[in-house]
Image (cartoon, rainbow, N blue to C red):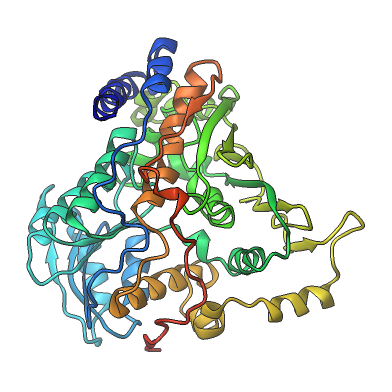
Length: 468
């Protein structure tokens, strides 16, 4: 088994080299070798359900203050028991702006900026418990690995890793250091997704059969805008061809299906359309601005990617990814069971318990009250006031801090981070091999059979206050 594990990493490493050059897993032979050598790695320590020692005050260092980072700093500054110790970004203006926003608060963080590896100096500090990572994707896993090695818990914006090898490295490092590695999948804390999870746990939809999720969001112009992403990093990610951003749609439905906690993903199949937008946009812009000529010769991912996954227990998941077509924003979020179903997008969210139509608004309100998740009852209204995608970002941050302060397991562990992030490179492999099925690794080392579903009862914890 250990030899198979190393063969698996070797093949994944070759895949990473291939991605760096052409954006795809080049040969069917590599894909076949990957499938043959995918295996369960022996688990050193089970991080699912692991409760780290309590932290009376959670001392945080933030790295990446361009897009998502400033909002995270603002939200964390409003949670009791948090001390913001450090801020890091390579751009001095970004760091100084966020530090200025904390003036008048109890937080006086030290700043790290100007050099590419200043984040390491921040991670080296002994007075930090948690590193919050909101950098470009390629830095997520390297920063998380280094931080855990320095004895820090980590929270990583999505995706947590870009390659299968990085996914395994996150798992092995978290298990060895016994430091939490949480993927910051905010959509798991969307109010309707939480409601659905609570209803599913109480059997309202019967046996779950099929789920759907998506990230359909028109980012064509934003990705080509020079000022949107540092060094055009997000645009450059689109040289890869697959479902590059699966976790917003996948996270909530994986929880409904108890993936890694009673069921596991078995294999996936992925198909992409041709690119009908991104190369044309690059060519159009290059004719007006020489800066874009570097992109006009590149091959971009297809507009729409559809990835289907089958689980060990015979359930199915359908994921979509399209960020270059003029679609109305949608995460789809569909859950279908033997007794009922839900769907969100287009709004409003809907619930059905048969084939005669969706329940009406009055019945929906009754269901909302009856199955309101405890976390929403506890801080839902405060979360809406603080904000962050309607409040779900704040729920995510508050819950994370509350778990760390009360010595409770985190809702999202390293196995979720690895599995959900792995869908991107696995889908690339499938697309490149004419949609051949690809085995999905079991990052839990077989413990998915006995791992308990996440606790959404809030019977323990829930004590952390909010400062408005």
